[in-house]
Length: 285
Image (cartoon, rainbow, N blue to C red; front, side, top):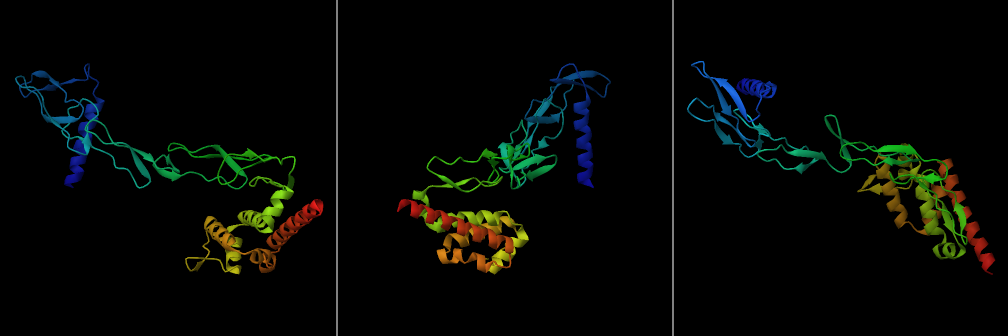
């Protein structure tokens, strides 16, 4: 009850100071018990009123304590408490006796009316039109034909194949073209190209299907099966692919036979890479 009373009194005093429209911002008028009107000096920023002036004494002011401030000339009895930054904010400007602490949303967050909210992550096939800031959200746009965006980036044109290269896999709205030459494909072989293609096939699947794939492949994270969070599943599958042997990758179509579409896409990718390698070998003979 005491705290509530203090807050009400403080609020009333602060409102009175703000509401009054006096001719001089560095002074204020008050009426003495005798009825006489006197003009008093206001306390400068960084201080607060300790004692009103009289007809014989000037206003007595006191500096604000640490963690409190007054930004303008005033005649309030208490300094204002500085704001505190939340866990989603960083301190952009320190609290001083004459200025409030300024907080700003952390990297990856923006101020949404009353709290910091995480920036929107653009969906597959969408690129960043306007990058998010601490004060505004990320704006996304659909990538048009011939453009793609990967990992929450702006839409950029598909990379054109060089004169000595051949288009192995056409780009999509979320994946760039995969171009190869006979030199690169024979040196890299099946494994490197196939791992790149497989992870892109996995990325476009929904989380439920990824979770089942993780279980089929016995992919675990810290002793537990892949979580039901899309990005976590992709990270775990990427880790599995990085460590997988060529035989393990080549056997994916059989292991994932319950997932017809995925199994077929991987099988087609394997066949296409093999065909291109054989074509290059025959050309070089």
